[in-house]
Length: 215
Picture 1 (cartoon, one colour):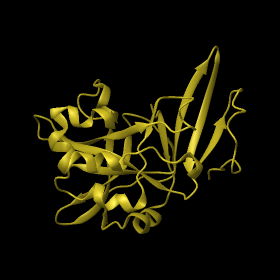
Picture 2 (spheres, rainbow, N blue to C red):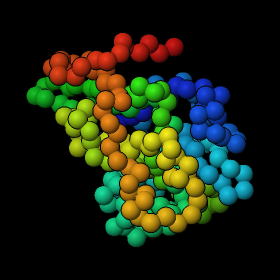
Picture 3 (spheres, rainbow, N blue to C red):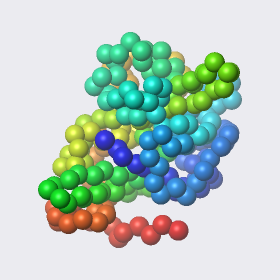
């Protein structure tokens, strides 16, 4: 699964790229965000438009397999998600994500990015309300079948949305399952950059760009 993501874009870039109407909270320049951390997500409010806020990556209960990653093939087979998938869709802005595999005693790690820059991963969100009245926003990341870059590491990859599909995914309202399912297809590997991080044995990954230097 996706073990971590990077979100390094500035808020001004996200505002322009995703047509934000309001930013409640955003923490930029994070090279590695992992499950149970706070993660930036964008949702659409019926009155105030597109909002960027911080969510906890992992729905309640956190031990559930799909609390952090939700396989698109299982999405419409779980009644618990019927309400969420129709009215509580979000996107997770991202600059890159990480996958890992172990071969013998060697651990190989890969960072994947889009050639076009910052991208959106499809997600679902919910609001967990404690007995004390405290509310916590939580989200899960949609996963789809891995493309040829990711499949040597794992069978699934984050569902990266096409730019023209972002509005349809965020728009509140019922949509036929086949329409939502069609938005969650594997991203074309030719539009991505793969950078091995440490380890050996990754010669089969052709680097298409210089290693990114984070500042």
